[in-house]
Length: 112
Length: 116
Image 1 (spheres, each protein chain N blue to C red):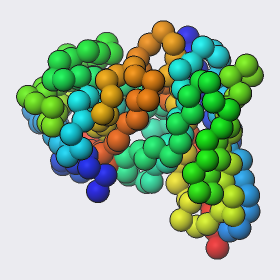
Image 2: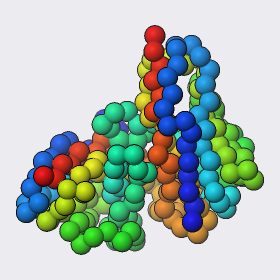
Image 3: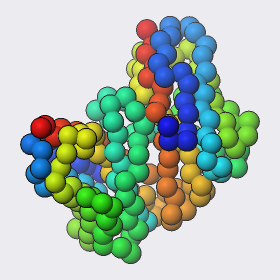
Image 4: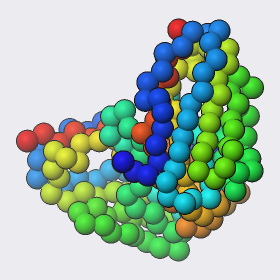
């Protein structure tokens, strides 16, 4: 059974820092992995989607990498800003199911 | 707004009430989803509809009843809920069918449900 873990559960950093959020999954047989952002009391916004054949995806200050063999993905945020404060969730889609399996998220706070 | 609208934003109901959650997507997508998000738990998929046909029912109790009258609208009818059903209920849509390699979900802002 696929399980997705995100560490740390919460992170607080000063503005301007480069930071890395971690996501690990137990079964490497996945179609893709997605990173989402969720603001308090709101829905999820898809940030990056990495197909199983890809190693990384970039969007602006965000870079996500995927290492299927080790069951890991990282989301790198460059030059963090207070507006980046949110919960970041990763989700994988296994080969044997159509549904996404989500982690519990990392709650990020960037203070001025 | 993201193109997926959910109403109401907040709902408080007693265990004997009947209420409905509504979701509308303005993106021309073909698939719609209900997710449940409880505190400190991963998102749980509840129901999936593709082209108005239910394709996934993730062993959800019968006190939750979905309805998809057309590809733009999705409802979740609630009846005789329990306090542990209190959660954020999120609706999502996707252009591609469930399971497509490029499946990308667009979420609404959710309905925060409290069952007393």
